[in-house]
Length: 222
Image: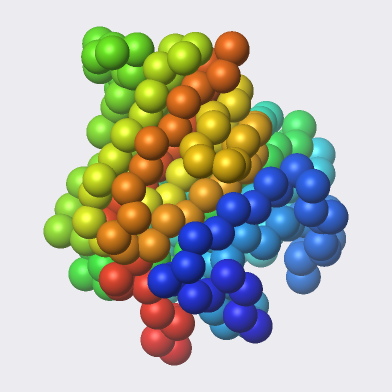
C-alpha cells in the first residue's frame, strides 16, 4: 500500500474528517496519514484504542515514535498519559494497550536503524521561555532529524526554514499557513526546500513538529 508516499509534494490531511479503519487487532482502529507497505510499513498514523483493548506482544524492528493525544496508553513499561512523547528504538518490544482507552499519533519504521535510545518525556515540561509568542521544547535531535513541541500564542507566527522537509501535527488550537487553516489533529507535510510560516488563531495552538527527515524516507527493509 502507498498513501501520500510522494515526499516531494505538500500534503495536508484533516484527520478528524477521516473514517476510522479497523486494524488486525479487535478494538484498535486507525486513521492513516502516510504509508509505504502493508502491515509492516513505514507509516504515520493516528491510532485509537478502545477501553480494555490490547495489541499482542511485538518487537519494533524499525522503531516506533508516538505522542499520546488523549487518554492513557499503557504497556509493561508504565502508564503514558496525554501529552507524553515516547521513542521506542529498533529492537525494542512491548505489549501495548489501554484500560480506559486512548488515542495516539504514531510513526513506524522511521528511525536510524542503529539508534538504541529509548525514552519518554512530558512535552509541556520541556518548554523553554517563549520568544515572540512561541515557546518551544526540543524533544529529540540526531543526525537525521529534529523533533519539537511548541505552544504558540494567539496571533504569533511559527516559522521554519529547516532543510530536509517539515512535518507537523496540530495537537490543539488552529494555525493558518497560506490558504490552509489547520485545526486540531490536522497534519501537514512540506517537502524539502519549502519553508513554513503559520499564524496561530484566537485560542493559540499546540504543535508537534519534525524537520530534516524526509530524505531518509523509504520502505521498510524486511
